[in-house]
Image (cartoon, rainbow, N blue to C red; front, side, top):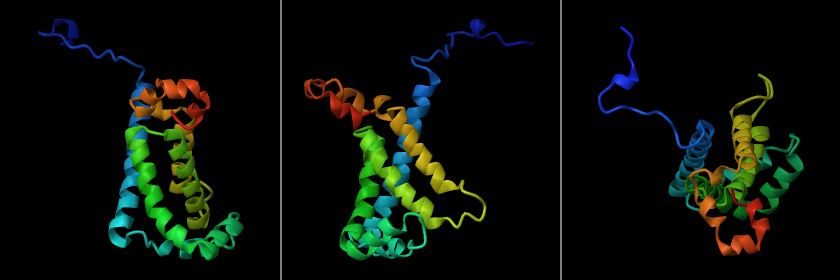
Length: 173
């Protein structure tokens, strides 16, 4: 016997207010935000602003394509790196969860993921790994302006201040 939704008492309508892609991008943004927020908060709760593994990690990237940048940061800015890794991950995560400054947060997420991708991978199984996928997720959020979908960036972009300074939309959305 076939089921006919029109015959159901009370009815049920599955029409959505927006295309499914809008919901998907918002969900992707929030889940990625939680990923980074959880990682950053774990480091903050365990080590405070003294995440000493950060400078050591960067110093070990000498033989990679990002080696000059990474080793410079590891040797010359250890205190800044120790504080910025947990703070950066936490703030990136909060920005994505709330949908605030999503493009700016995603840019810094791409920076982190670039370092992780090059620093973690021995590429024994090819170039594609989880860190590259994370980098691509951040790039996707920049391209699709993920903060405009159920994020506070959609509200912020409607303010008079942003309308007077339209270039701010490059870091919002």
